[in-house]
Amino acid sequence: MTNDQDRPASQSDAVPVRSSVAGQADNNDATPGQTGLLLELMREMRGQRESFQEAQRLAAGERKSEHRWRMLFQALVFGLPVLLGIVYFLFFLSSTGFRWGPFGDVVGVVRIEGQISSTDHASADSIVPLLEKAFANPNVKAVVLSIDSPGGAPVEAERIYTAIGALKRKHPKPVVAVINNLGASAAFLIALHADKIVAGRYSLVGSIGAIMAPWQLDRAIAKYDVSQRVYASGKLKSFLNPFTPVTPEVDLKAQKLVDQMGTYFLEEVKARRGAYLKAGVDVATGEVWAGPEAKEIGLVDAVGTIDEYVASTWGVKAYDFGPSNQGLQLLGRTIQDAVVSSVQRLTTTGAVVR
Image 1 (cartoon, helix red, strand yellow):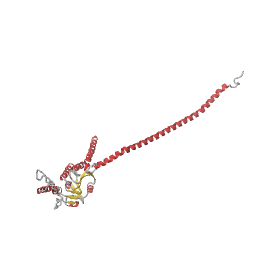
Image 2: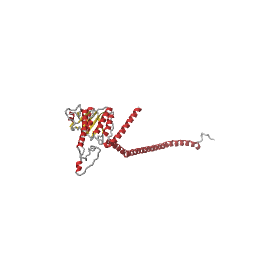
Image 3: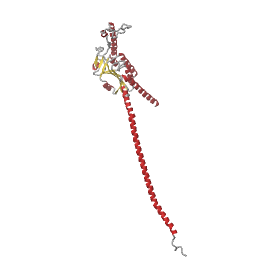
Image 4: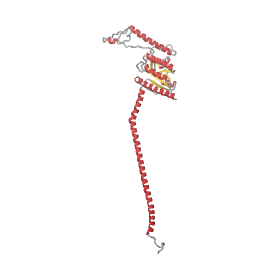
């Protein structure tokens, strides 16, 4: 028998020991490889994610650029015509006499220019509504009548100066008539009803009186052996007919009418300017005077232009109420009235809400 300590170790006893050592070695070799592979996968995933994010960023930039170009194109296609339409509409409003404001303290200027008649630029139907606007506006501190007219229909002038008197009683404001190139006949009749009359150095003032100038064509048509038969209920019913001969009675009637109207005009001048008229000067001759001479004989109060008088008297800007071209005046007035009414309603509503 042998001792177990003296017996050599068997293979079966040695194998497990080697296998355990080899297993530990295999485990130690696999861990760094797996870690590297994992790191490589992570780097690849991070790269893919960054590439995807970059692609998304570029795509978003392209979409934004495309959106900007599309908006610009739409603005050019649709916005430019709208803008041009607005500009054209504003110019159209201006040509119709539409005006914004006035804003702040101003002197309201109403123009009486050209022939005074019911069908012309300076008709009562055109002038009186503008006078009403100027007097009623609280920003207008004074009203200036800018006159440049040879005169015209006395009844139209009467309607205008009667409206001035009524508006002055309702809205007490200074009224000044400034004569530019010409203030004659019915135009001067309107100026008489202002608080003051100003004329330029080179203005022509006066032509106080009346005139009637019918055509006399009966002699012309008689050369062609043509005449006109007139049937009238009275012997002077057709006294202004230019195709019938003028009789002494017709002459007398026409001159009487002219004298009556001239007398009314002179009485108006004396009533309004009597305290300033120079003694011994006949202002009813129908003549006109230059601005300085008109001041000397008492027809005007001062010599100057509208610009210097407004600046030196009130020191504020002048606001032109018109009128503009008569053909578009009615439309402009209608639009302006609508806008003003809307603003007033909004202002009233705002005041109630507060």
